[in-house]
Length: 232
Image 1: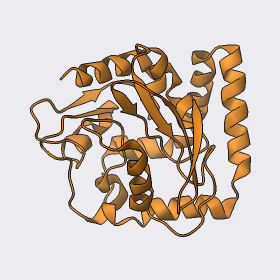
Image 2: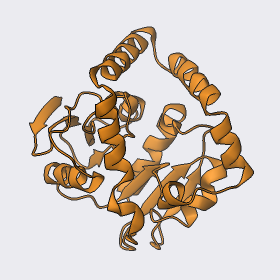
Image 3: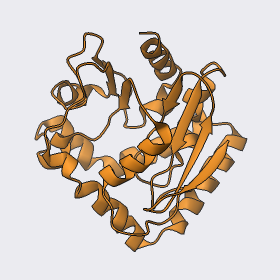
Image 4: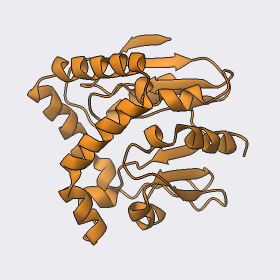
């Protein structure tokens, strides 16, 4: 089911299904719709699982921002809808380190240098993952969303992301919260020292995949990890 909520910041669109537990999907900024991005993971779960998949402001099916805002402002609006999260599963979430002091290791430099080629490969791989009907829907949606927002909207989203005070504070995930981070091999140590991994005994960093879009490569494995987390 899809729904729009009017907030003080602008219209937020989200797809959801009632169920227990409720799993929240958060995507990166861009033209990919959140629900479509994680559709293969959702399909791999029992129907009793609920999900909440919002699109950020100035992207996908959500609206343009009505005023200046930060990621924290947007998170507060989403929190009003979601209520409370008890476990964290992150697929290469953006770390403070990557924003403020990116590692100078060869693997990072090589990855950035080849980003254009990697993006082409990712798009080609996606076309192999989806059926022809799914491909048509996915890319039509992606192209329409990309055309909906102009450069000003893109800058508003980027500014909200880059200027947020979160990057400069010291908040970490509580040790009471089990935290699972899924990442490519070359970023494993970055996440082990990041704010996303708590000292909870059940927290861990899981290595898999060859691109940032791990949820497209291994949807069933990610679904299994989330099921394990839910059963903690």
